[in-house]
Amino acid sequence: MPMLNLTSRKILNGVKTGLLSLILTGFAASTTAADRLYIFTEKYPPYNDTVSGQAFAHDENDITGICSDMVKAALARLDYDYVMKMRAWSYAYNWVQGRENHGLFCTARTDERESQFQWVGPLASIKWTLFAAPDSDISLNSLDDAKDLQIAGYKGDVMSDYLIDKGFNVLTAVSGDVNTRRLMLGQADLWVTDGLVGPLVAKEEHGITGLKPVLVFRETPMYLAFSNSTDPAIVADFQRALDEARKAGELDRIENSYRQ
Image (tube, rainbow, N blue to C red; front, side, top):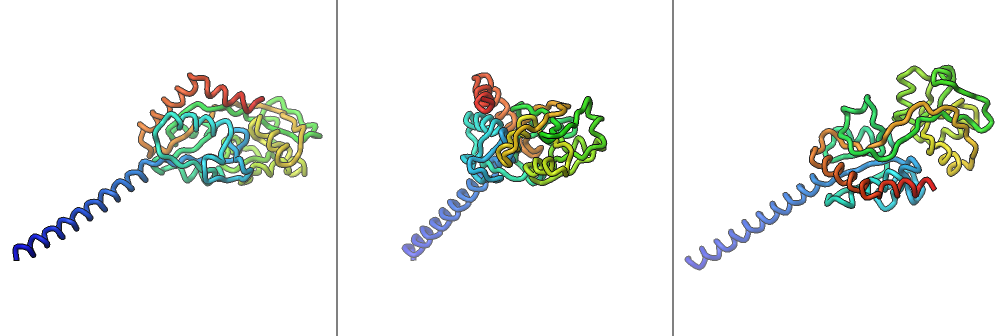
């Protein structure tokens, strides 16, 4: 009987140890999952792009561009587990909000969006530009001159939303690269996009050069935007890391490399 009790105790202790190990392992896994950062972007060259040329990406190694490299420069100074993905802007914008440890770049920081996110930046800046087709004779002295014109835009884009809110006639698409064709086919009089993005997309996607920038009506800094559910300490860490990268001259080198 004593030997049997000793054996039983050993078995019981082994079971307890195993259960404890499983619990601790599960706790560690859940903690790691909770601490992981999920960072989203969109295809918006030259600020965000893919090496593969696709409009989506599942891995940071396939994501490049001015803002992408700036965010990576900050991440390189931090010890966070993270995943970086590229998705359609409207999907990513809605997905990130309200989810813990989720961020989105490059996000234009505007008064309308100020309370929706926690902000890290600035990264680069965008120039809100109205483009016309190469053979167009449209000229604008002010934004109001475009009130009666059809403007091609990008769904969920801050520039398109701004014009829609102001009562302009904006035709939006889920993918911004179709807007060059809309100009060339006469389906739109103007295209609202960033001053660098418009000519680049027109040339790379459609082989079209000579778009006419008829009006630059605003300039906005872009940021890495974290959800309000994200720990503010994480946001502070990112801001510190980005400031260090800027002080070291790394951000200027990144931006200049894409503008040459």
